[in-house]
Image 1 (tube, rainbow, N blue to C red):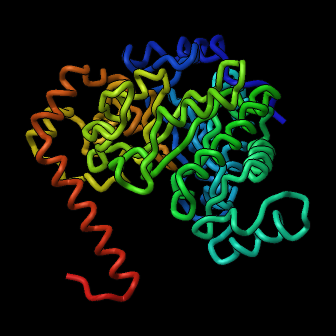
Image 2 (cartoon, rainbow, N blue to C red; image 1 turned 120 degrees about the vertical axis):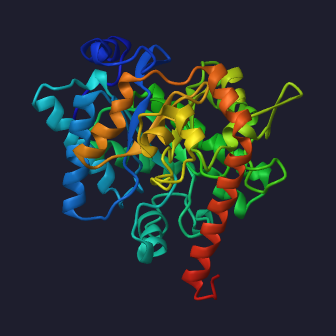
Image 3 (cartoon, helix red, strand yellow; image 1 turned 30 degrees about the horizontal axis):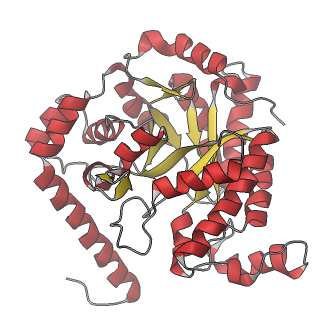
Length: 397
């Protein structure tokens, strides 16, 4: 087990080791920690040894080049994502190229970590059949989601083992909005509060430093949607779960990129009677947002018009422009991007020498190009519908 956690002194030292190679806007402050504005995402890839090696090496190369936030989840590649990251961290420490207190490690629980064809069977065998837990099959939603507090507790412990860590710096409940498919909103919030109580106790025990929720749809939908999440309500649940102590709910994660710009444009949150975007709400509540899917899997290559390309960076590649857009979003802590090769790591981290767009310039970009951003969003939805039709064997046009 690797002892310790990210600390203000450790992350300050990491910044000082690298800052002469970076623009002043590259590192950002999060609860006294200093965090790189580009983080390593590890969601995609096959469950095989070749991918394991690529991820392990990506951890090492990313940290060596200036990334000190690494994001994973127990469900990523059926636990292999966490295990590969653990090996990468161990290698960095053994080579004395980084120390544990310099690195911010995040993980998630709430999605079953089994292969698709064995999810229900494995869940039943591990959590229901032997009667060790109060978990029932009815706690499984959509064949792959569960936030029962005992399940979350066990998944957190397993993540610590997979990573080989004493402490996970940020632990997320993974896509909790999916619970709303099969339960009332009141029951959902009660279940979420119970999960938060588990995480508050885990923070007391030193297993995590902070927690939050990582969402896919929840913060990008209209309040009228079944899967919409109210951040103010959720923060209040965390306060209740913490009792007389300060709660440790400090982060959220959500998709944000050129095609998924709802966090910037949709006022779907309400705070003190005022309608706000999710990023504005985070700012008011002192919650730090982390962006997933920052590049939308490189779908913008060759798709960014010349006038937009100039605004985002005339001498950049389209991948770099897309990442520059995301990490320039006001109030954003970090933009996650999946990287498995040295070439991609070097390309993305070239941005470390370039300042992010300032708030005024970024807001002007949004206003000027709002029509194009909406068109990209709609084309993405059409592409998804096209893929669904193909999967179902329906006629596509």
